[in-house]
Length: 414
Image (cartoon, rainbow, N blue to C red; front, side, top):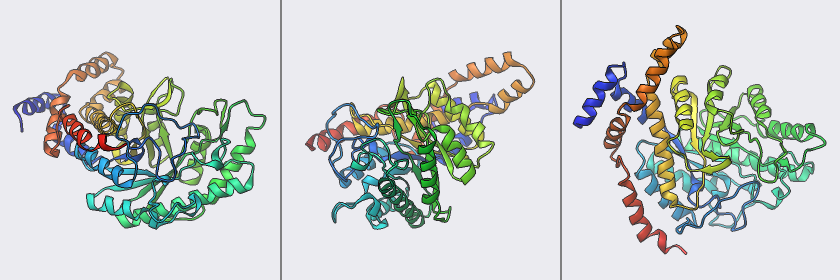
């Protein structure tokens, strides 16, 4: 324990915060690290263009080109992130070593390599059906498509991924979160808003009709306010999914890039937890819109972290979702994950009970002063101690290892 940390302990103890307990709690919070930052959402199914409102910008060298390279890059990233975490896969990151398989025909065996990878490292796995970047999604409609044959393909795909998710959860002994997001919508104002949503509801009903042990599989649905090419109408709106989740006992996943810029996901978390046992998150950094920038140590993320800590971290499944191809992809992973952890630590070091008591008594001057002054408390000293306990660099020196890996490995990828 450093002298700096000992002094920080005393400072926080004066306002009733046990820094050792905060570190312990932070070490118990797992984040789900998204595989698609490592290869720009490409996956291993094909080398075609992204579609469905998905796009990456930048051409930084060293993108992972196959499963082995992606796994190696994930290993480097996780070695620089304190704590024990999860990995989040899309369906298109299946093992196609025996040949490409249609998405509706994917089987648990196509993810055995990922299971072995995770088991060896003590990681959990989450999964997502991939309803974009495919010929049958080229017109912007999938589970809400008016053509029954197209809809059937996507329904069968989602059913296959749920089966795979349950298999993963059973093999790893930790629940796999299966999250459904679709790009469906229209560029112009639709004549009929109801029918696409009715088709989506019916499709979800069929997909979720097979029951799996919640110890192995947890389901969530994810909304979006709009997307590229579907600016006027999104079938899977927040209101649709929030109500569907509540009625059908599935989780509502909140992506903080999927709302109007003036909406606050931090505000949604406590509201939804009054009616749901849990919520799920995809944390990103939107700039003007859902631009999926690397998560920063920002006020928005700190507020989200605050509500997670107040509610109880066990009630919120936290995943990250961004993809930046303009900088070193491993550094993007590490920075985003560490910034989310720093935000959670900041929340764990905030005297929420005292502030809430001031609010309840109408003592708003005291509440404001304490909430502002605590911002300059030595959170960095506690972060450094957490990193030291975890055996990782506490400051930007971790980047030296990434740069060395880039020099020796990433620059060789063409």
